[in-house]
Length: 332
Ligand code: TYM
Image (tube, rainbow, N blue to C red):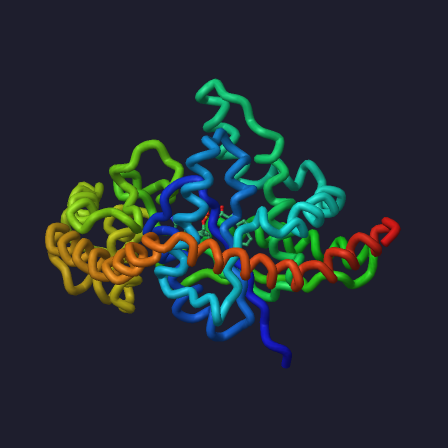
C-alpha cells in the first residue's frame, strides 16, 4: 500500500496552549511524522477570519512554526509550512465554496459559537468566518490527505470535508481522496481550568484557566493549583458530573501515559492531584521551551525551513488542484 498522507494545522490567533499540544501537536511530533508522509501547516489565512492586528498575526505565525519545530517536528522528515505561501489553498477554497451549501456552513458549531460571541460584543461577523470550513477543506483535500489528526473540536469540520470530497467526486469524477479525522485517546478535548465546561481555547479573553506552552513553570503551577474543581472532595473520573476533576485527570493521564480512571483511584485529595498534575505539565513542557528558546534565537533558520516547506507543499498540491479546475469545466 502507498504511504498514507497526513495533513494538519494550527491557527495563529493566539499563543498555543496545552490543549493544542495534547490534542494534536504532540502526536504530530512523536508519531505522525514518522508513520506517514506528513504535512503540518500554520494556517495564517484562517487567522484573518476574526478581528486581527497584522503585526500580531505575523509574530504568532513565526512563533507557531518555531514551537512546532520545538516539539520535535523535523523538517527532514515532514513538510512544515505556512498556508499563505502556497496559493493552491485559496485556489481550491473557491471550488469548495462552489461545492458546499450555505446551510452546511451555518450548521458548524464553531461558526455558531464564534459568531454569537462576536455579535454579543456588538461587533460584526466576517464573511470568511462563515466560509472558513471551505478553506479548511481545501487545505486538506489539496494534498490527497488520508488522515487528519486533530482535537475533538475539529472533527465536525473534517466530517464536512469528507462530504465535500464525496460530492465533488460524484459530480465531476474522482479527484479527491476522502479523508478521516483521528483524535488522541486521552485529552482530545482539554477544558479551561477556570471553566471546565468550555474548551481551553487560545483566543479566549480570560487567561487564568489557559496554560500556554510558553508559560513559565511558576505560572503553570499557579494556574493548575487554582483550577476550579467541584464541591465534592473525593477524586472520581466523571466528565459529565465532575468536569473539573476529570479534566485534571485527563491532563495528568496524557502527560504520564496512564489511564484517567486508574489515576483517580490513587488520589484522595484534590490538592495532591493538582500538585502532581502541575509538575507533570511543567516537566512535559520543559524540553519544548528549551528548544524553543534556541530556535527563536535563529529566526532566519526557521524562515528557511518554511520557505523550503512551501516549495515542497506547492509541488504536492498543484497537480490535484489543477485537475479539480479542469474537472469543474474551467479551461486548463
Ligand atoms: P486550532 O488552531 O484551533 O487548533 C489546533 C489543533 O489543536 C486542537 N485543539 C485542542 N485539542 C484538545 N483540547 C483543546 N482544548 C484544544 N484546542 C485546540 C485542535 O482540535 C486542532 O487539532 N481549524 C483548525 C485549523 C485548521 C486545520 C486545517 C486543521 C485549518 N485547516 C486542516 C486540520 C486540517 C483550528 O482552528 O485549529
